[in-house]
Length: 212
Image (cartoon, rainbow, N blue to C red; front, side, top):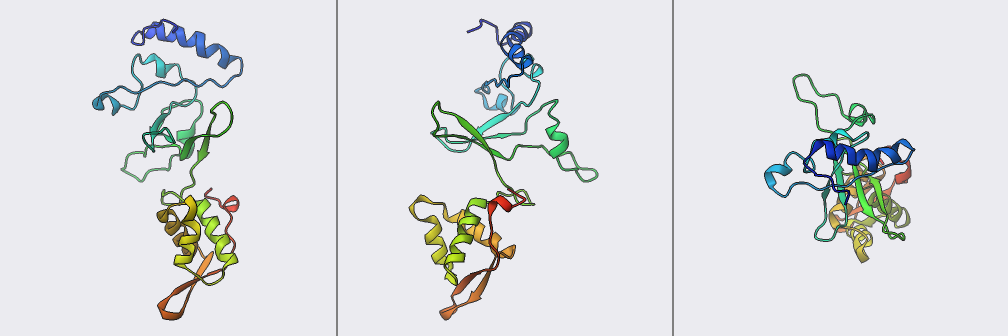
């Protein structure tokens, strides 16, 4: 709409100075949205099409969002951005072992549309375990509360209570229960006919989880 040639560095620079730099200098948070090339080979770079000036003008973070649900735009996971001034890579990247390359650093977050007027989006941090795997904190708290109220319940009881009526998936519930047992929040008790029953030892709350 501005009329700039996307492959001309000078035109892109002038356009971004006019459209982005002015409100940013005035104290606003400016977010620009672009798209990747269509060819699979060009997409491997992870950068938007056109002039390199697009990247050079960025003062904060440059994010690549990958869809995690299709075909509806349900979620997107921002990841592995080059950036400056924010220093996020320096702070959050783990120190690599001697002789190994530095790891790429991605934002453990999920971009979700909300039900609020105007079609707003929210960026929600995704909790992770120490090994980098997803930590299902919502399911962990749901299971913990259920076992607290239903002492010596079976695994099937937990599965049916926490996955029924669209409350969650079977895999997340299994993973959450395994973590609760491993970390000592829930213990197992032998039951009749080789059943495994569950007993609450400590209350788990995601708001008190350092990984959340």
